[in-house]
Length: 137
Image (cartoon, rainbow, N blue to C red; front, side):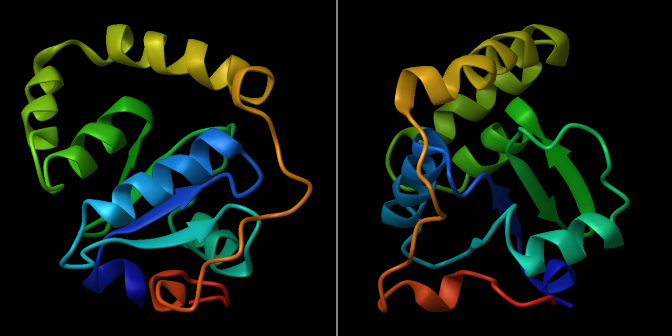
């Protein structure tokens, strides 16, 4: 099962901001640490069921070491493994989650109106296709 062996990021595949974040992570993850699954995919649905994630799915989810991280905690955990200065953002983990997630939730609430939405999920290029889970895991 993929979630036990490597970190998986679940994201909204029709959200321009979310798809942009995935591209951002890919460019700064040269060791290909992270795998990805659009929330609209069978693979993501299988992981959501496996980890009993049922609440509002308009969020960024990281499954790492068989634990589920959401919203700002997930984003900060990812940032600490990226190249460049991005790991410094992990210092914000000391900010209480209700404050971090408050900011995250405002962005999430308006992401479609601010950044737009696609009619269908992004299609990975052949060079990064292997990093995307599409079938149930």
